[in-house]
Amino acid sequence: MVAIPHSPGDAPPGPACNRVLVAEDDPMFRKILRVWLEQWGYEVTVAEDGGTAWSILQQSGAPQLLILDWMMPGIDGVELCSMVRRRDSSPYQYILLVTARDDKHDLIRGLEAGADDYLSKPFDRNELRARLRTGGRILSLQEEQRKAREHLQFLATHDELTALWNRRAILDLFHREWELALRAEKTIGVMMMDVDRFKIINDTYGHLSGDAVLREIARRIQETLRASDLAGRYGGEEFIVLLPESDVEQVQACAERFRLAVADTPILAPQAPLEVTISAGTAVIDPRLHSEREALAAADSALYKAKNAGRNRVGSSLMENAIGPDSSIA
Image (cartoon, rainbow, N blue to C red; front, side, top):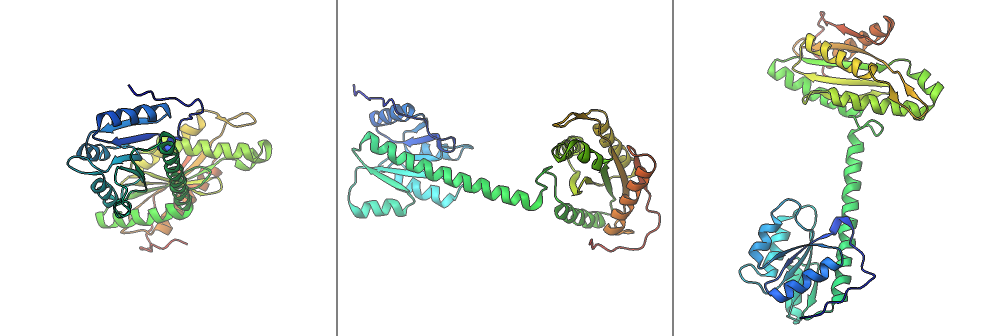
């Protein structure tokens, strides 16, 4: 029985690379690797040959750190490296190729096949651990870069405070829905909503409370939307909702649900629970008769009618007078 010492300084790897796939056909070596890796805090999946390893790698959430033996029955380690790289999967998988070969030509062949690093058998336990840590750092950096890219992509189309679509994105989506409705000869509901007396909230309780109000209203809007509806922050304390294939009654009912979702429950702001209301204006557009600009203007006009009538209510516009299609929006 081989004694495998445990270092008291062992610390678990980071979350981006805490799973390791070991593909090794030698049972004893496979067992030793498993014990070492588990002592270091890794979750270990083992495969007895390259074919089994390849099947594991097809599964969702497959390990990102791979220890592949060069010599295996069926698919060997070098061929498995090539298969992984040809797939060009995401997230990236870091490959440590283990081999008894020490010829420089063989090592170059393994690296060209897609291995990130290699170890020659027999190898030192601490060297293996150090190389895995190097792989873990690379994977962690790549994960940070991926998250940064996704965040930038999100900010390009979404409002950072509320996480709703931003003004430019929601207007682009409106144009897309307008064209779809025109081809399908369907109508689109447009709803404009504004937080009542929002300036007083900001002046009395501060901008942090104002931000909390906007975030919570956005959350309640999202919870009330149908799967096909689209919501965006139009600007300041004003929101816009698009309701594809909706008639006047459906749009009015939806606007009333939004109004009640805000008015019925106080919003927990930093200073105090606040009773907040919204006013809404709606319009239903037939793209064969009306333009996007006209629909937005009609919904906005209905919104201000609701505000002038006392706030915390829904106004509507039937858009009876058509001017003709004009899909541009300033």
